[in-house]
Amino acid sequence: MSRGAALCASMISSWTRALSEIGGDPSDADPSDADRIDQIRALEELTCAAQAVQASLAADFDASQRERAAAAGVPAQRRGRGIAEQIALARRESPHRGRQHLGLATVLRNEMPHTMAAFRAGRLTEWRATLLARETACLSLADRGEVDRSLSADPQRLEAMGDGELVGAAKKLAYALDAASFVARRRRAEADRRVTIRPAPDVMSHLSALLPVAEGVALFAALRTHADGLIATGDPRGRGQIMADTLVQRVTGRGAADAQPVAVNLVVSDRSLLGDDECAAYVEGYGPVPADLARELVSSAQSASLRRLYVKPGTGDLVAVESRSRRFPAGLVRLIRLRDQTCRTPWCDAAVRHVDHVESVDEGGATSAANGQGLCEGCNYAKQAPGWRARPSSGRRHTVTTATPTGHTYRSTAPPPPVSRGTPQSRVELFFVDLVLAA
Image (cartoon, rainbow, N blue to C red; front, side, top):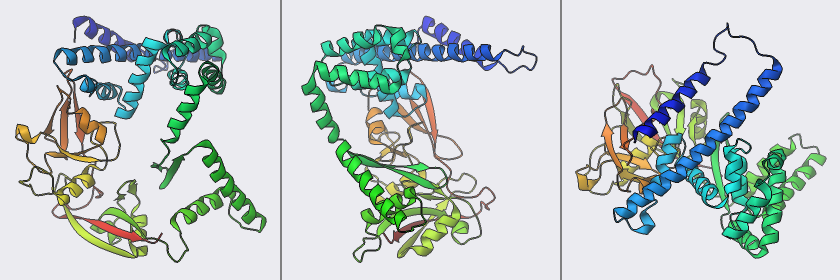
């Protein structure tokens, strides 16, 4: 890092410290409510301008890294590997969000100068800039520039538009400029249909389906019509409850004679399983669940098979034996997945897709729990880019230190296993439970 860049970073850090001290002293003069509103607006504009500068820096970093890769003889198709991941680490967010941020940054710098100018002036938020970039993604460079000029050349008008109004205006212009590309984009989007799940508060889950609009509207209408019919006959459940119950019943076949069982993997301490402790258990693919729910799942299962796992006294790390194989054996893969739970890249949280060597076999790394880590597919490929280096590190639990090509380092520690703090450390057992639940 150059001295000028370091000075700039130091200066920015001083601004952060100064802002953190505002309002912290009871002796500070109490501003009027009008002043508070003015300060909120000024801080919002400052936030937008700071995000715009961050985007410019990201685009510059991308260009510089690609130039270095080209000079080093890296094939063209691999020159961008690991760039967005470094930006994501600096922004303390997932690699997926880092790729989104870098994509927006390069589009704004190279193809939408008026939108970038409004962004830097504090007139446009990062989210609204993202909306404009997204709605013009299907257009040619010239047509995207026309939308940029039409909507963003007048910052005052742009600032006054709501999100829905802005998206609607961008869609109308995009369709008028290139209807064929707009239709082709819709068809490509239909290929991205999918179903995802993520945790929700109070041991609930969000099950989401991304569907073509006709199918999504039809599905919702069918569930709502069915719920309205049951409510009319006196069903005491609410409309949302009936729709949710109906969705589960129709997808899983619950209540039908040919319903298929569903497999669920659970990790629970011996004391929680036997009812002596209330330490949370862990459901693979979801996350922590209360001990009473874990016991309920085990007791209601059609079948359950138990395998013991052991935790090192005083460290909370899972125990495993080493393998002489280059590939991780199935038992060790399962243990590492259970230990890491999600991708070990800081702030990623994606599902584990690859179990990989922290220190590569070519560099002398062993095929062991200590030298293994669970990664998502994108993070595993990113760390194979030139200049990345990861090593196991000392820590209370399994710890990995990763160094990026710019010399920055990041530490990742495995989450604690589902064991209460008061559990005697002389002997700690966990159970990995293969549950087969009725659909």
